[in-house]
Image (cartoon, rainbow over all chains, first blue to last red; front, top):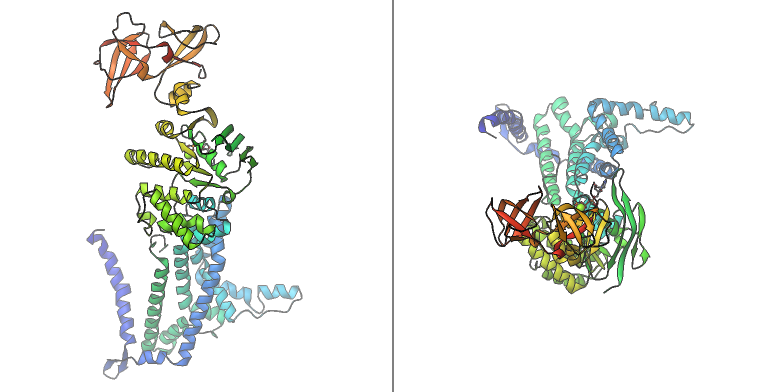
Length: 273
Length: 348
Ligand SMILES: Nc1ncnc2c1ncn2[C@@H]1O[C@H](COP(=O)(O)OP(=O)(O)OP(=O)(O)O)[C@@H](O)[C@H]1O
Ligand SMILES: [Mg+2]
């Protein structure tokens, strides 16, 4: 691209990415004094208090759990879609994509009415004379919300890699004596790894930082890192501490991306982003 | 040598609308190099895929050493395939690609090393063990594909146009290598090509196909010298094919004259096709020649000249000769009775 065409993008990036990043870094590494601010690691020290480490641990745990469930549901779904039944393929693809056309908040609110004490599920159970369930405001509800919202991000990259695998390679493996299980384990799965890595990344990161899902479906009982940051900025007004948590998150995300790209190996071009 | 290893019995395959194979019968003998030859879409790949077990026949049976293998999945057949587009495993290096089948069969690490090593030597790829297959040239990938199949010591190796993607020089080299490997290992090769020269130079048996049917089965010499019909004659090497009338046994009319020939058994005045190879036509003085015309084009092809002679009756003749007559010259074309091949008319 020519320099001149690149220019608007550069401005955009500087204004909305670089400047805010520096602001976050600035707030994270300073504490306010009467005469302005001084450099300090105080904000970071606070983060390592047990109460906040517990929040971090819960965030990691729930995000990881949701990612694994997304993978378990998403991989077979992607395989069905990449399979040979052409008519069904577009229907299944649509099933995954249509909810994404709807607003994220609306989708999550919808779950409220389904899971509520007097929601759809419990009404159904009552009609069947079964005891009602307390699903809403549990960790389970939070995980459910994450899986529901982020599943397409797992399915689509895996689907895109799987559908590009040459059928000839699968036949070659069969020709060399591999039964269908061995074909999957030794050929299809290894070849689909780039898609898995990209799916895992695309689910894990938003799951780690979400604050809407945990607030709506967790009822505020399960503070996640995202909630913590939001509170510091919007409720407590401690921008310094909020920024330092953000920095920790950025480091964590960069770290996990590094680990992921290690697994991904050389084939970077297949990823969806 | 004459033991039959694979037998196809009135085998047919129909895809939704197209008839890909229309009831073919074929024996494949042990240790022979058999080539399926024919124009694009004639059903060569389909035949291979049926033998390999990748497709199920719509009708007929496939026998493997006398046993019906219809319905037996590919991984249970003692057949290996070299695919038209190689289909190498891009996530594995050269060594692991070749070792794939052996690992499935749970050979010990030592045996695998030994066999793969020997195979690499055989296909001239020693030292390439840990190379990424995507970094190899077309010819090298081709050889990995062949090694990957051969290392399993199959009874029958199926090769689907394995040399089609290679340039001419490499292709000639690989033709030699394949042929000598086949002889040395004593494996039955079923080879697909649409290159008639390749078929003739490599095969013990050539099967000429067209529109899902077998046109002729025979040795390369038979196929070349005694083509059964005009299609085979036309497809195998260049031929002059003109309409003629069989006046009586050993006498045929074409191009406005009568010629002695060696064919007999046709009805009196039956309409036939006359096939004459360009190299069997000899340039002679135009006077007294039964077939004469004017040279309309000359092409130098290295070993010989290729000329087109427009005869007086309107037919055109392709002539191969080491002698050249310039364009516009009047020439006669001489031919021996045994070089005139009479075919039953198949085309209207
Ligand atoms: N999977 C399929 N579905 C529908 N039609 C098919 C399929 N495979 C082959 N055909 C048809 O069957 C016929 C024979 O095809 P085949 O691939 O056997 O030809 P081929 O002789 O190998 O040709 P080529 O030299 O081009 O490879 C063709 O008309 C082809 O279009
Ligand atoms: Mg083919």
